Image 1 (cartoon, rainbow, N blue to C red):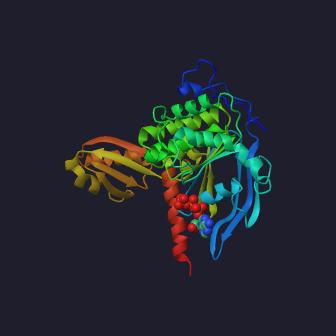
Image 2: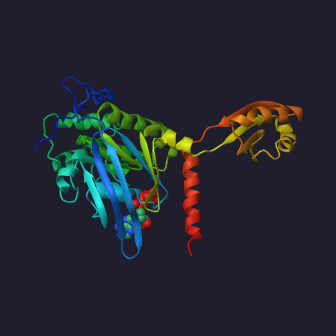
Image 3: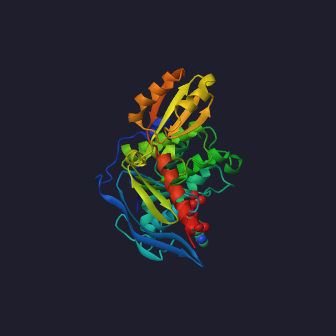
Length: 347
Ligand SMILES: Nc1ncnc2c1ncn2[C@@H]1O[C@H](COP(=O)(O)OP(=O)(O)OP(=O)(O)O)[C@@H](O)[C@H]1O
């Protein structure tokens, strides 16, 4: 079986640049179709670990879905079920409508998984690693060498592709791994903390790349991340897990609004901090965040006029008063605190 020609496959005369990644989108079916359907997924590891406890989720084609949760929440275990690498204790998993355990090879041909651990052979160069992957996946040899160079070039490794990956930095290794994953032109990408070890510039490039391969090329992406800003920037939907259960899911901005977090940031003359604290007494909980920077928790937008009056009356020089919108981080921390309390309350 031959895979469709990848959209970034260089054409004759193409130079190896990022432009090679920006070929016309291929038809990958209509958006809205579900690519992943997980229902009541439960996983016990002997003797007594419940990694997943009744997880249900649907992922639409072409969407980017973030799995968030503390260490050990069950994110990677979900990915491993999707890739057919683990058998559920209970519940069902369907990827492209098929059971990944029964149709492992069929499903894995259509997905690319970036696991938390390295999938590169350290003794080989990046180019050789990709050649090896191409052989394993039986990719057509036609234009393959150009494609390998284009993939590595697009991920910023164009001038290092003939070096052994054992000599790469962690970030370079991560980029080479991503190149290897994308080489097979997967319809579904499972990315386990892809930004780990990447510097801020590389993180930004990675986000742009993920956006491009999903939005422009219709690929579906499931991404495990601890980076809430990344999730908010990148994901159409996020699923927050705690102790193997889904505790919240939805669009990141709707979820952030649901956090119901109300706080007001006030910037004043540092010399007026004492006066400001006295003037705001009884208005929520005040905390100094830095010189002249006061945060009032539990105070909302409608309280701002009264607050401002009190401060000015007390002779405080006010430079800025800003109601703070709820963020995904607020919700995450609230949910996490709730989950921790439940654990503490257990008999
Ligand atoms: N093969 C295994 N055998 C026993 N326990 C396991 C196994 N794999 C995972 N677990 C346990 O299942 C739970 C969920 O692990 P998982 O790796 O899915 O968490 P995670 O959310 O991906 O965490 P992290 O953010 O640290 O990667 C943990 O308690 C983990 O120790």
